[in-house]
Amino acid sequence: MKDFPAAYQSTAGSALAVDRTFYRRIAENPGRRLVEKFVIPIRAGRAWKVPAGHVFRIVTVEGPQVGDLNLWNLHNPRERLWASRTRQLQASHVTTFDRLWSTLPYLRPIATITSDSLASYGVDEFGGRIHDLLGTRCDPYVNRMLTGEDFDFCCHSNLVRAVAPYGLTELDVHDVLNVFQCTGLNREDKYFMRASPARTGDHLEFFAEIDLLCALSTCPGGDLSVPLWGPEARDPLTVCRPLGVEVHALAPELLQDWASPKIAAYGGGHGLGLKTPPWAA
Image 1: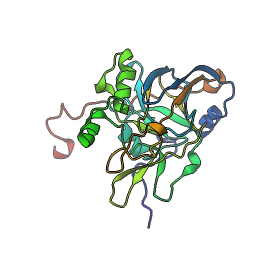
Image 2: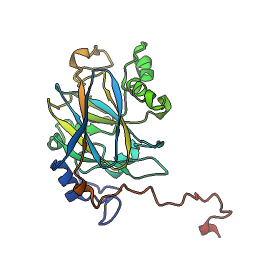
Image 3: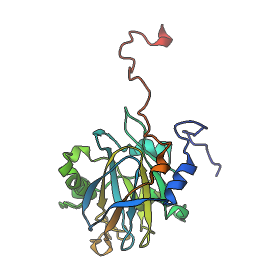
């Protein structure tokens, strides 16, 4: 089948161009210092802060496990990860050197992936790929609709509990990056999920382009090797595992010429003050 070019393409010097040399240096770990480390138990969530210019790493500490990640501007939660635009500007499944973009009217990269131990997975025989932006978090509303039962430990609920101490609510929880999750579209153009291929010690690492508030849920579906809905569904508790998080400060000399990206340059007029569009004058 003939390939078709991407709609959004990077040119030299554009906002989509990534300085790979800079991010490779970060991934090589020279002079980094561990400032925080913790483990999120199964079917739980936790939020944490990452200062701009630091890196954070999500690690499979006991085997394959999917994690649902949300990101906000620490100082302005209206600026947050925009999964759909990231999907367009980068890819439906992200890896090293891909960037996570924020919502309008800010529209800037808020994190850049510096290291991915599963980068070589590629595309499997079913069309599955890793680190998914196609889908979103599991939630208790859909679960009730499909099963007729209430369940308070879906990723949406885990994230709600995680951010409550920071003054955020359910309305602030947004579409996620599904870390370590293998997904794709089948021949009927429907979303599918496969068992995560992650192994103990696999990681996905991000460079914080701005001050971030992060939140991660350890998905109650575990590694997604067990059907969650339908006639073969059963409780996947036995395939649920914790996830580890590490935050590292970088050597100051690495960041000497780096600065946080500016918000979008568009002036924000939206034509509201125009009586007649320019082409109709």
